[in-house]
Image: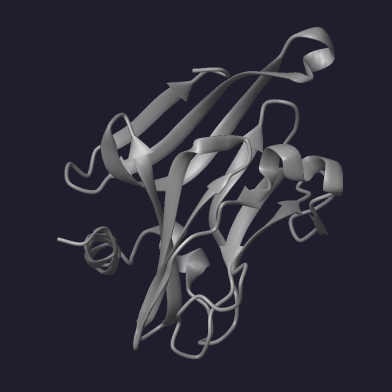
Amino acid sequence: MRLGVAIALVCVCSLSSSTRAESAVVVGRPIDSVFFIEKSENRNQVHYGVRVDRNCAPIGDEPVYGYWRNLEEGKDARSPLLGIEQRGYGVSIMRSQARTTGGGSVQFSLRGLAGRRIVIDTFSTPQGCRAVAAARILDQVAELRSIYVKLGGLLSLQVDRLLLRGTGLSSRADLIETVRPGT
């Protein structure tokens, strides 16, 4: 079974979860938060969204985008990623975009996790467009919910480890994988 179809089926079966409610949007509007990165340094988060068309399919050459949710300033405060922040949080290697009549998918990686392929599948539901991100976590295909960055070293400017968090698509088990820089 194609990865995208499997993800869509799992998502449709679990639409009642709180993470799904946030990602449902009016058809044709961007889906602002598919997954996010949080740091040990403060409460601010980098969220990743996807631009979709009226059929809920990814649109444009770079449909996936990241931005800051500045939770230290307030629940609705947002700002773009700065140029220097693109090195760690930026989207790169955007690949094949599949488009269907009810959605589509896009493959990419994050610059700070270049070896890890992420697939965002978008699809239409009666509530609007929805999206889910999938990646391999602990050697299982999983819905990627978040990445936690533990900073350390001199002035806490170095990445000590990453925790990839998600749910196994087959097992439905919560998964957490620790990734250390250089591994």
